Image 1 (cartoon, rainbow, N blue to C red):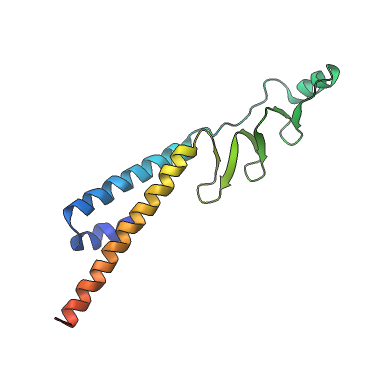
Image 2: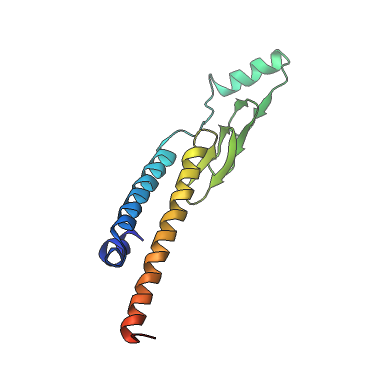
Length: 142
């Protein structure tokens, strides 16, 4: 979308739509960077996993334990089967970003989705305007 915009479509829209598209795309890439390179809330074991498990059994504590990660899961934590790790406040795993979406990065994810929708709208408008302009050249006054 960006390459098509840069090389051909920006000629067919007004300057304020060009600025809006650039701002939306910058925000989109910034939010993408923040989502992909931030820690979504992975739960790391505090000590040797088996030692921690034995200690919990000795004290007869009622805990929510993940036997895949060997970690004590707090409330609202869930094991992501795609990432194969436990994360806090798990919402879903995004296959397109290959990242767990949690309470930590949910705002950035929603900003990313909104920017994708807005940029797709501007891009669609530019494509429609281009098609309309080309049809007007072929059939003037129709």
